[in-house]
Image (cartoon, rainbow, N blue to C red; front, top):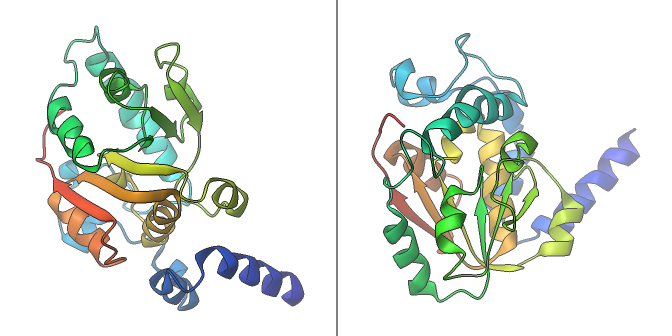
Length: 231
């Protein structure tokens, strides 16, 4: 058993390498002891401002339920192109487009693309792909969008090896707030660093941006704080 553990550790080091000492240190110190911390505890914010379980504790997979179940599919009915409250702001599509144009990317990946609402607006300007943890949400994407199922918040060495620096720019909007466990934040950020060649654009709540900065000071990350809104 200990030999298997050492092989696993060696494989992880091969991918993470010296480039990401923060992740290695966090994992090495047993960051999983923080698994039951939530955004309410970390920031002492009211429960209604956070998408978290009523029990105040989370399991390794709870973010999938929160993203696809509690919020995602309901938001689809409101924010899809013909929904009751189409997604047009916070940030606006023009703001996302302008931030991407600064980098002049040849390839773009949206992390947590959901049903592809932003991708629909951007595909005419960029070669954009999207990934999401929820097969149910991806099934609602407009035909023709380049999307695939992927969980950015877990270890996937094969995926990282095959796609290292595959995309010039990664971006995400309102996704990281669902990762209520620091170990998932650490995995997600280091995975994004491996996948992006130039920039990682983050649109998240201010306190989420501040928390993410504790995990990496890489210049690849570019933060764009967004407002707390009822969507």
